Amino acid sequence: VSSPSPGLTQGVRRVVAAAWQARYRIEVESELRFSALAQRLADAQMPAELVDRARTASSDETRHAAECVQYVKRYAPDAELPPPPPKAREFAPGFLNPLQRLTYEMVTTCCVAETHSATNLVALFNAGPPEPLLSSLQALSRDEVTHGQLGWAFLEVARTRLSLDFLVPLLGGMLAADAGQALMTPANPDEDDPVLLQHGVLPHSARRELFTATLNEVIYPGFERAGVSTTDARAWVQERL
Ligand SMILES: [Fe+2]
Ligand SMILES: [Fe+2]
Image 1 (tube, protein in one colour):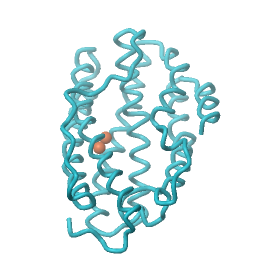
Image 2: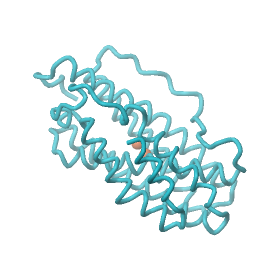
Image 3: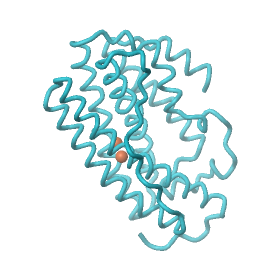
Image 4: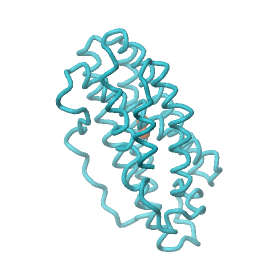
């Protein structure tokens, strides 16, 4: 990656650097997460194809983390990379049984987080930033699309093994957690500068719009196809976003 492009204000550069650092951390944790999920899918006697896809996803995330390092170094040359967490966090509430917990993790990781990540990366690619960023975004988005699809494929199998009704009251919180506090609070002007698109970062307002569009066009219909009602989730999200 060549030297930082000139013309970025310090404020915008800080936003770009923070975004790539955050992305790096997510990729590193995703590698651990998919590796753990692959094992749990195998332990739960899920189809080998799903196990393999989770393993592949884990190695995809290793490549993504390495890719992100290039951009962290470019925009924050002095930043120290945080050490990888000892293990991926578990998001599922403790009151669920083991198969429900696995389902919760697959849903929140793949159907929600990876689906959003994929649409964000596709939008960033479509904004046509300069190389080498364009190629990086193409590679990242292609993989994240498959990680999202893994979630929907899992759900088709899971619904034959357990009732997915337990997800209904949990979806809203899951979606809000994915949106994060930052998306629900107003941005400062640096966070909404259109020049961010040239550096692989979505301006805040675009990210909000895309979040809602992805819910309406991909995520809600996906849950409904799997027989999971999204009426409560829609109300929950609408109240907060
Ligand atoms: Fe990734
Ligand atoms: Fe991913």
